[in-house]
Length: 59
Image (tube, rainbow, N blue to C red):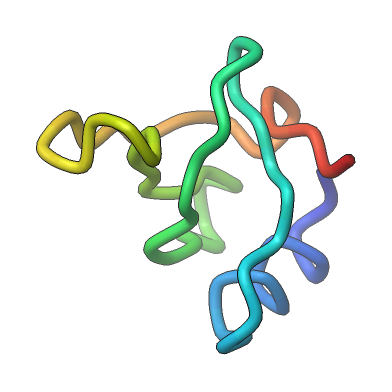
């Protein structure tokens, strides 16, 4: 996923269909300088991760 699209999704009130390792995730915020995002799986909100944007897929 590219940086601008990830930022749009993170700021949007509409839930986007984004996956990380085949699990649907919520993008909390994007960290521009490292091109990573803070995410969590929808079914595990306590399991926050920082992942590379290249590993996020929008369906």
